[in-house]
Amino acid sequence: MPLNPLDAYFYRYPDNNEPQPYHTTDPYPTMETISTPYHSANTPLSFGFDINDLETTYPVIVAGPYRATVSSVEMKDKVSGDGQILRVVFQVDDEAKTETGATLPGGMHRLSKSYSLDPEHAQFLVRLHDAVHGSKKGSRPPMIPAQWQGKQVLLDVGIDPERVDQRTGKEFPRGNSVKNTSHLRQ
Image 1: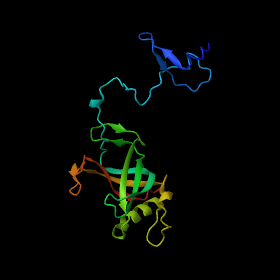
Image 2: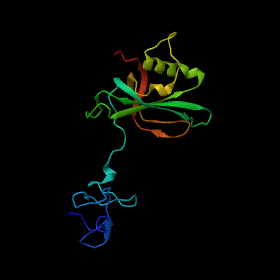
Image 3: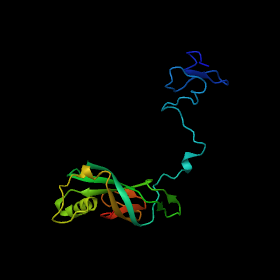
Image 4: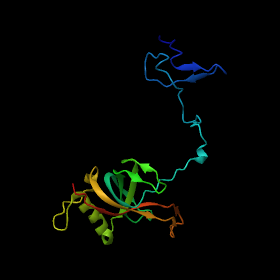
């Protein structure tokens, strides 16, 4: 049964009788289509556990080869301000075991790698280009990184220890890194 038009937008809590807005896109809401109170960004969220106990670091997967898809490619300015890098994000398609023994389903883990655009480091970017296209010296198509999105490659994933960047003093936790890429033979 439709509610009073005013009740479509407000529900009165019985303990304090204050109107609380509901979120609905239904122009004729009923009690069945209105189920949860609307929350604004100023409303504290409750998950039923202490959020201070939640681990937010990315899981470290066991080192080794993994099939992966290039999920994004973007140009970014270097922190030093003297040029750009190409940041590539890979989505691991294979099921992956973590160091703690948990299993991550395929598509649930992402790794990124930043490639320098400096000519002296070009071989790393060309190696990725060859992995995406299955090309080699003498048969390489033009390098258009945006066309890599959605393409599969074989990643050699390693594990990096905790470290501190000597230049910036920034701390990096133990984590995975892309050591190499190669063409995935279909």
